[in-house]
Length: 143
Image 1 (spheres, rainbow, N blue to C red):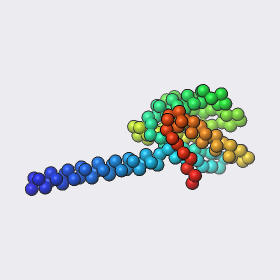
Image 2 (spheres, rainbow, N blue to C red):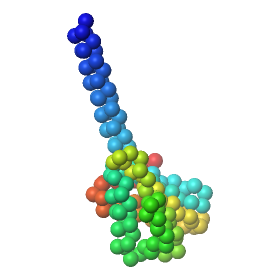
Image 3 (cartoon, one colour):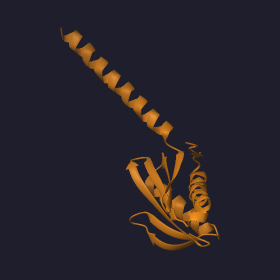
Image 4 (cartoon, rainbow, N blue to C red):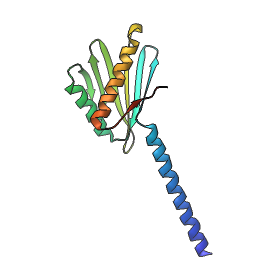
């Protein structure tokens, strides 16, 4: 009887370990896909990356400060928020922690009706540059 209980307990532990590993792997598979959308006069792009939030935020600030076409207009290191200009466009970027080694980058930019594609492309380009700086391959979700 004791052996049966022990075997049952080991089976439960093994199954829960396998299930949690599968769930983690599937979540990581979802990550690194850049989702972009138009929400009225605002374009938004997001991506989830498997990296610590402080590293992602540092990559964001490094990307923006080393590229002469961007000018940081507002920065809050505590909230991991940066607002920057690229020519006439104002862009906001936020880095949030989802888990220990999982972060989300959200970029939003207001646009005029005739500049929809430019602001979306710019938001996606900034995310791609940050991913490259982190050494993470991110792709644009074509949906």
